[in-house]
Every structure is written in C-alpha cells, then in structure tokens.
Amino acid sequence: MNGLAKIHGFTLIETLTGMALGIIVIGALYAVFIAENRSYNLQENIIEMQQNARSAMDIMAREIRMAGYDPLGTANAGIQEACDCRIRFTQDITGINSVDAPDGDTGDANEQITYGIYTSCDGIRKLGRKSQNGSYQPVAEHIDTLTFEYFDQDGNTTTVLSNIRRIRLTLTIQCDESDPRYIHPVYHDHFRRYTLQTTVQPRNLNLQDRKVKGL
Image (cartoon, rainbow, N blue to C red; front, side, top):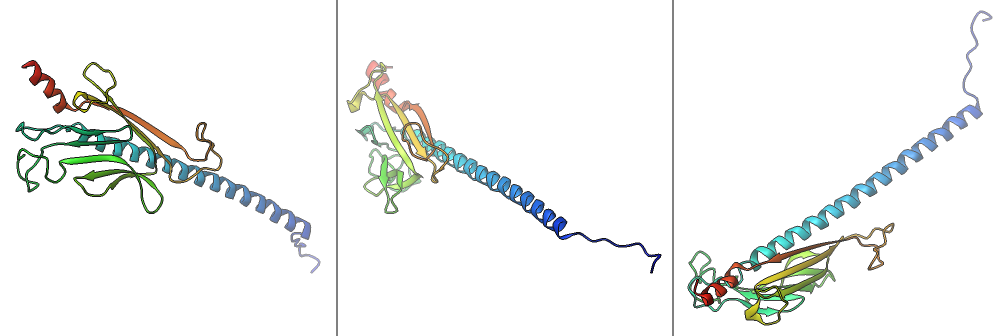
C-alpha cells in the first residue's frame, strides 16, 4: 500500500469553478445563437418583402402596359378610371373563350382590369387585382401605400383620361413582422419598408397619337 501513488480528485471548489465556467460559455454560445437566428429571420423577412414588391410591380406594369390594346379598332379600349390610388383600364385580348382571338369588345374575361388597395377580413392591406365586375384577388400583402401619377405626351400631369400616355407607379410594402430594435424614421413604428417606383408607357395608347398624326 505504501508503494502506491496517491490519486487526487477534484475538490469541491474546483468542481464548482468548472461548472461556473461551463455555464458562462454555454450562455455566451446561446446568446450568439439567438443573435444569429434573429439576424437570419430579419434578413429572410426583408428579402421576402423585396421579392413581393418586385413581383407585384412587375405584374402591374406588364398588364398596364397593355392598356388600350384594340387590334380591331372597335373596342374603344383604354384608361377608364385614373385615381391616385386606383386604376381601371380595358383591353381587347381575347374572345368569349380564353383561346379565341380578340373579338372587338372588352366584355370578356381579363379585359376590364382594376388595380387598387383593399383590406381583407384578416385586417391585412393588400394589393388587389379585379377582373370585370368580380372582387379583388390578392397580388401582394402588407401594402403600405400605392400611388399612380398620370402624364400626357408632353410629360405634364393630367387628369383627362384620353390624354394619358405615361403612368408612374409607386408601391411601398412593409415587413410582415415588426423589429423591436428598429424605428422607422418617418412612421416611427417598428416595421421596415421597401419602396419601388417605375414608369409605364402603354404602347397602345401611343398608337392613338400616331393615328391622329396619320403615321
């Protein structure tokens, strides 16, 4: 027995010290994880917000660009309503059936289009698209503002429907989740926002100028 080396274990103080250090390290790692996860979720929300805005703007611009399409010259297609927050226009793109050729009127499906903002039963403001006399169908959610500006062929603002040749669209969308650490500089709330603006020149409305000039 005297020849055996003595085996020493950890003292109580050493054990408690090791546990305390371990808790500190785990707490630090957890704090880093929470911060990284919060940052990841924030970036995901921002990317989703921007993608929704771009997609909505692209859909509106592409369809408004076709306003006034009237290949037979008998449909009297064009801008029918031009408000600062809503636009309604017509186009002759099909017949009674969706695969038919234009038939000279604007009474068929998707030939009378309205874009505007509405609030659904869930309380969310949405960009809506309405065909004919139907109800709004959502294009994008969490819309803050939507504005339309109308210009004539000389670039002057106009409220005369027959003089509209260019339309400026401005869309502001907000994140669907608030960020308590962020305060918006204008609205003074905790929602981040993203604004897109584009100008659309409906090519078919310009054809009216060419007809008048005899081109």
